[in-house]
Length: 120
Image (cartoon, rainbow, N blue to C red; front, side, top):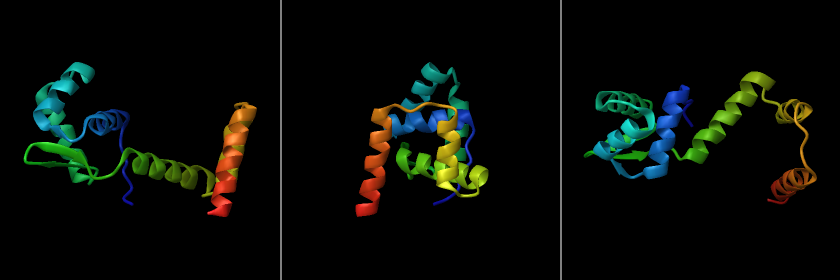
């Protein structure tokens, strides 16, 4: 998958598209005006940039995502682990839980995910 480097505003815009797709570009501009206080040209500029990056597509005035929200955030998580923890998932998890206590339910849920991965 491509490496999608997005700023916070671009991510928020992508989240709006994911929540409403397929969506007419004019309707998207209205939503962005309401939720982000953007003028129409700003919406179309950000849309064009995300289309150029291959994240979104605007065809015949209808905007769709070429990458799902799950695929995007999964790739982003993998990149964080690669960049910050030299690709070590255990190092990432250790760093994450060292600052935050996890509940027994969360630990059980994580264990179930690990067990399912081992079995599958």
